[in-house]
Image 1: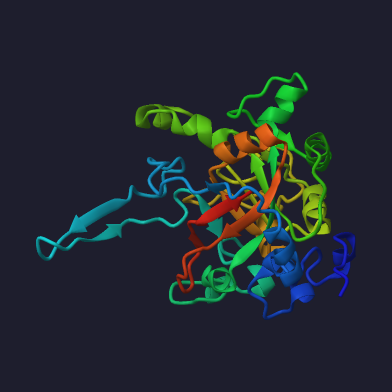
Image 2: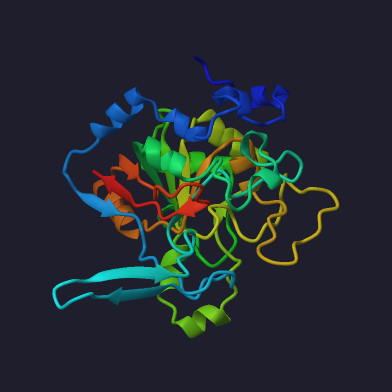
Length: 326
């Protein structure tokens, strides 16, 4: 079955949505692009057996930049001399390397993915939870695009704490410079260097540093078109939002919308159409430095990528438990 182009989705209901492509009862979104044939082909990319864990420690980003998530408390206890057990409190599932479930972000006009209403997406509900991806399993061809090294090759100054907008043309230029081609059903990893600079700061320096400045994907319709038409199954980055921060020039502003009283203002963000309308799997704060260095060393930017979220029924997000194998 041929996947409609993004421009053909203009006649969908709502416009720009994939809800009738995968079916109105679907809970996997773009993970549907990971067909058995594509997964089998990706497995053949493992040639050396090198493995790269793509998760930072769950406490790596404390204190969390937005100020909305408390620090994790890990307790180890024993019932006798030869026994150990443990538990955690305040485990915010999106406080470090993470994958966003489709129930994470909705669209102010059209609701959550496949039209799920806000009042049907509350405590005690499970629709669009991260357990759907845990059960399906996420595996396929991963491709890394290395933004800092791209700038360096072109003699351009690069600062991972500056808002650098990555548009569709830059994605094409990045891929071409690395010799990358696209097969459909690929998982895109975008290295910006943001996490690397943040993690070397002390807790005091983190509190003093403005966090809403980061390179990332442009908040433009051309990015939705590029990701959809390439049949990208998952897009992840090493920054807080995958997209550029803060939002400067967006195609997705909702007229008359007021900032929320609490939490991050998502107005104009790529998150809304990407997750709620297209059903795109989105990963943030992934650990990409070691993988990027190896790719730069051997010139091979493709690999088998696996991602196994927690099987938490109704979970809004999860550590990705991601591994790249080359």
